[in-house]
Image: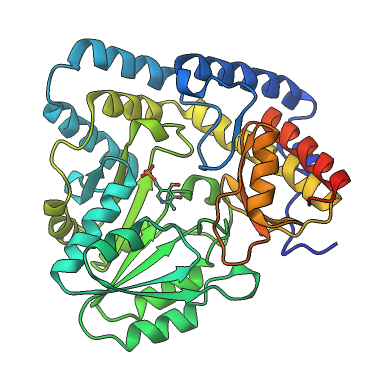
Length: 387
Ligand SMILES: Cc1ncc(COP(=O)(O)O)c(C=O)c1O
């Protein structure tokens, strides 16, 4: 069998967590949560469809977050949210132990990326990023006519840091370096020693955007560290972005933010839209920060789902990239478009094109129940020779 790395098997994982057979109960509970969610989202009511193509959280959001959002709509839906933004800013700053002025809010973290792209365009910057990676920043930079340099990832989908560094050093003026860590669509992390060494030795004209949308899933890995450590050390050339879309299950609420030193945040903030958070989003995010139980459950379910999928990929001897996120990039045995169509016919949404090589699929980790269904579909595809 050929895999790109070791991931714990489902059995090992369950033993590690001491969950034993309890996961079966959790999985049943998960489908109930999912059923409730579809009930309030009529445009997704096709219960046969597994939505595994956008790296969302199939659990939905914390019930407390949902109640808070409903209340906020009823009570404050007719008011601009300026006071609640200020309160939320203090709460989120406390959560991260930073100053409120260090935060840059966005209607989803993609809006923070947009603000950074616009700021960089004012400086006539060059943007450098690995390929493949999350595409939003590139799109925004191109719309601002920025020069974009993409550096292909190396073997095993590792970022080619040496090549990126070299390209960055060859530029003049501001260089915006986009590092999605963990990376999307590959799911792997950069060892923090490598990344910190690069940033600590880079000129101040190199501005590092560390997109940490999947931070929560990676933090248990001893080789992973958030760029927040560098910002706390006073590094003005680092901005991190975070989102409530993933572990908190709030992709539809559009709540994201960036963190930088006060000096850097003040440069970027003017390019973010004013009043870009909704009353409902703020209330839900605030409740989500308090709901530690849901947060923990969300991460544990994700681990369990990952181990179910990893077991299946191992059984089918399908190569995959070890993931510290809520998705896995894995090998398939037929062209991606055919695979996606077959999956769609079987009620599964996957198969967005993410890599140049046509034989890789990125699948999001749904609930454990969903991953069991997906695994069954994969096994049925093997019988037909499609994977
Ligand atoms: C790396 C990365 N950054 C940002 C986003 C978008 O996050 P948001 O929903 O906060 O705009 C995604 C969404 O998939 C992502 O994968």
